[in-house]
Amino acid sequence: MSDAYDTTLCVEELREALDQQGITLPSLGVDILAAGLVALGNYNTATARELAAALRKAAER
Image (cartoon, rainbow, N blue to C red; front, side, top):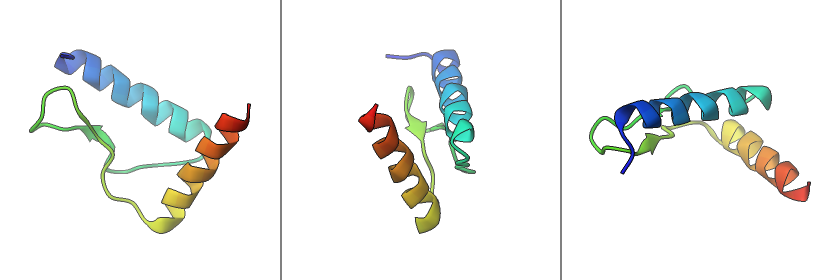
């Protein structure tokens, strides 16, 4: 199981990677109720589509 520090680092890495794709998930963070889990939060359909497009593009490489 991950410790809180490791989970926080993971969240920051994910935030930076998403930012490089122009994607912001305002609610992205550490799930304080479940140790070792990352909360992606709620976001609108436009952001969901941007995220899906970025993942598809990365998969093509």
